[in-house]
Image (tube, rainbow, N blue to C red; front, side):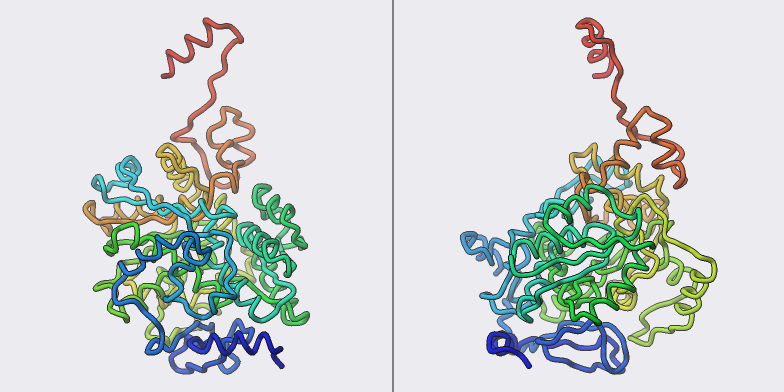
Length: 475
């Protein structure tokens, strides 16, 4: 039974409910319940709303009025200033640490690398979030719902960014303990240091992310711990707002393409939902196309869509090729392996939602190898944005799609940079280093043969004339 406080929260949240994404089921559940799947058919859940009673603005530019309310923590947040488009929580219950102060940057030098006309490539830099990645957009929403449910513990499986974000938000609440599951050797120190510093209980299991995901779901169910991985539908509500900020930065004009790295497929799923709802409300007149970019070493979505023909098909997803593919991975002992650790996932939990997004947004799926990812990363960095390797998959994917003629040079393209460079500095140092042993140890095993755009340190004698000569020679 809900406590008196929880009942009050429920009364304030009656605009929202949870609904199965399978249109052949469409079972609904109350907001004030903790679920990650449909009780009836087992599919994923959406957060849905009674939009007829919601205070949806007449036009997107109405949100500009929120800029003058930056002394209000809710409106300061780049997530919650769009509260009218995700009204599942009363404002008094919202958890925020100032997330969403992100930047959409026109990147002409990177556009030249990709093959786009000047002014046509924009980078959405989510590394400016408090924990250094896009995860904060969704975590503030999930932890808000966890607080409404009076949860005392929240858990996740993580390759790093989710754990850092959960630990941060639990620390900020002072009322919730973070429990984090990571795989052995599958998390960078940059990310692990955040989880440890923010006071999370960190459990390292013998296995990879997919193993950790299985265990955390079991543990959350058995111990009644609130699960915040992106199977949590409230997480994806927060991640919708990345697209709202993109539109805001483009003065509410819809771009031609959104290009995003594909790991657990939460972002692509959230983006599809965001644009579907905006179009339904008449707030946009068209929906951009979506490109989801897998790392070749973790390319389940690409394999299923491109080689096995798996698609949403109006909700009638053929499960047989998915089951067969998963069984073949088990049989062959296939493990995800890529330098882009944030998307090093073989069993994406949001597969069906992503398939829906691909249908809604007329999307495509591509894969790029680690060499392409690191070369693209170097170009992003040279343009003034340091991003983690997974982020650069979006730029590498845009370059590939441009070379195929799928993206035209005149198209307006937004690439999502999901995380900060300091999340995983080891790969960056190895790429630019003149130490071949470090290069081979860190990158060679993943098929990276050359640092095509390396910016190496220049060795020089500790003499004034030698230093001046080196500067003059390399400037």
